[in-house]
Image (cartoon, rainbow, N blue to C red; front, side, top):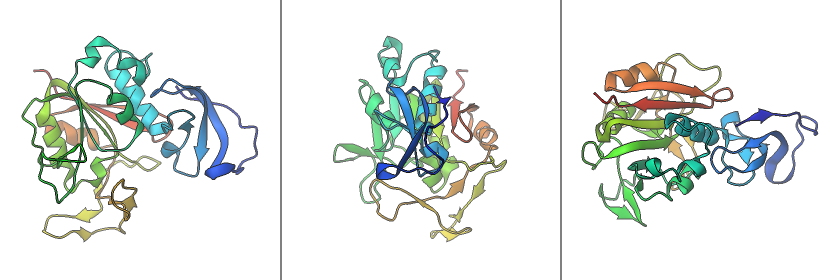
Length: 258
């Protein structure tokens, strides 16, 4: 939940560690903590941190979308993982960072992965499986739920990755994900890089996002637009969007049961 409140501090006030006045209060949809959300010097969706688990606005919105997708919009993610039916799901989350992983990781059938170019696919490094989203080593219909958080924009060929995620989901399974989107929301998806050849050719000024393993950051290949659900329909998904504050959008892509 997100409730806007008026700050007692003047605009632009900055406290310790770059934190400014709290700009909201409510219950965190990730951990359930009730208190103030704190704004930092970052885009809106990357700000408004929970005082307990540090979940930003986009993570909290994604957690709320997961709960709603499984028929329990009143529950936080920490509460949802105690529901017996949810505990039985086979869940896959590419990535090694973010607060959702610390909650979903408590489940008995949870798996996460990361892509290291120098590690064989399907093998592990430091206890984490190496997977390329464009060529996953999992069998068809292996998972009930895939959760990804700002991952697909860094994939060299994102629609190949979406197709692979569709393949490994069971009928009725869902991919619940976020990708960064500018505000106002763009209508069309645009490639930042031409990757049709062996070498990348930049079409726009290169943009890098923070990476847990690369000091240079992760290159952004794609700027997604609101035509994404239609592109995913061509892959085989039925996609809806959950809109949080401004551009904190979560996509819920379902693989039809039939």
